[in-house]
Length: 337
Image (cartoon, rainbow, N blue to C red; front, side, top):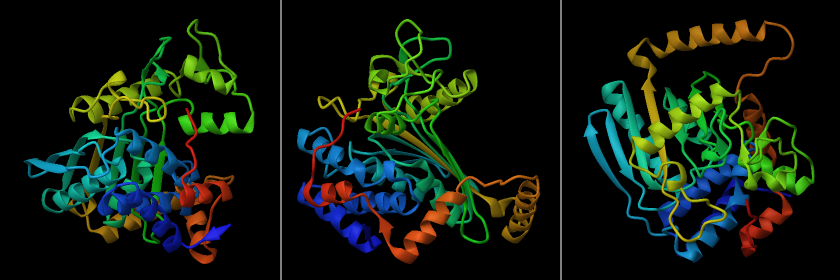
C-alpha cells in the first residue's frame, strides 16, 4: 500500500506519544523513519517502531529524555542523550555541528547516553542540505569479531559521509563496517536463505551459513583488516571519546531489556565555503562526477538509488509493507535479533 509522508508521520507520532514519548522525540523519530521509508531504507524505517515501544515499556528507553549540550570549544560539543531516542540526539548533534561550522569552518559533536540512531545517511544529508560535507558514525552492541579473532567484540559500527550536489540529490554513502549488517541477517532469517561463507564464524572459527546461528557466533569485519580498522575508528570516536558505552558496555536493542543502550554517536560538519566558493566546489564536483560516469559500464554514485526512490515516493506516496503499517497503527510485537 502507499501512504503520504504526512499520514505516516502522524501515525508514528501518535503511537509514540501514546506510549509516553515527548513530542520533540516522537517528531524526530518520525522524520527519520519517514525519510528512510521514502528513500527505500525500509530496514531503518517503521519496522523498528515496535522494538522502541517494547523498550519504552520495559523502562530502558526514556520517552521524556533530559537532553543537554555542553559546548567544549567554538567547534566542539558533547551531547548527553538522556537515554532517549538516538534519532533525536543525533539530529540535534548534527544541527549543532552545522551551526558551529558556520562560525569555525568545521565542527564535531560527540553523543553519549543514547540509543540506536538509525541510518547515518539521514544525518549527513542534513549537512549536505546546508552546503556542507557531513560525517556520522555510531557504535553498537558487539556482533563482530576483530580481524583474526573469534568472539564478537565490536558492533556493526556504521559510518556515513555525504556531500552536496547542485541538483539536491546529494552524495550519500552509508555502510556497516561488518561484512553484513544486522538488518540483513534478519532479512535472511525471514526469507529462509543461507549466508555465503566468509560473512560469519562460530566459536571455533568455522563458517556460519545459517543466519539463525549468527548470534551464537560472530559476524566478520568487511574486507578483513580494512573493515576492522574502520570499526575501531568508529568505536574510538563514538564510544571512547564521547564517554558512551564501549564494546559490551552497549546493550543489545533486541535482546537486553535490563539496561539502557548507552550507544555513542559522533558527527562532523565541514563548511566547504571556507575552502572555496560553493559555485567553484560544485563545478569541480560535477567534473568529478562526469569523469566517473564516463568510465564505462553503468556507474551509480552512492545515494543515486535512494533519490530515485525519493522521487517515486514524492510522486505516488510511500510504499509501506502491510504488516509494518499494521504495526504502526496497532503496535505488533517486535522481531528479535
